[in-house]
Amino acid sequence: MTPNQKMKKPIFTSKAPAAIGPYSQAVQWGDVVFISGQIPLNPENGQLNNATFEDETNQVLDNLEAICQEAGGTLDHILKLTIYLTDLSKFDVVNSIMASRFSEPFPARATLEISKLPKEVSIEMDAILSITI
Image (cartoon, rainbow, N blue to C red; front, side, top):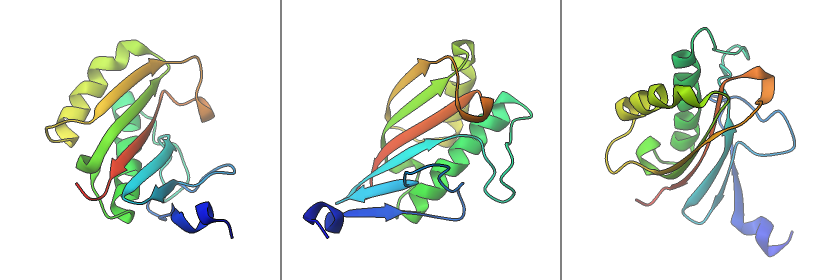
């Protein structure tokens, strides 16, 4: 085992969707956790929760929250959040939902409009958190 493998700890919870490729749900390095992109998959049934954009956004945040909790944190431990949208006109909806799910100080954030996401969803988020905040 290399020194990097000893320090790099995978994070996994059944309360978030399993990785659908060769990657980890999250990886911890010291007190920093890098969470892979989450789409609105319901971990209980493996189905998309995409009846509305609000449902998609909340499911993505639920998935992020479950991984944060498995790592020993909460959504409020997120330092940096990246949001990928297929329609940037949904930006205000995301802001509204984030305001109800996060506390100040809010995480640093980037929001990008992209052409396509896995499984034809409208939103994906990844995050970096510190579990010692």
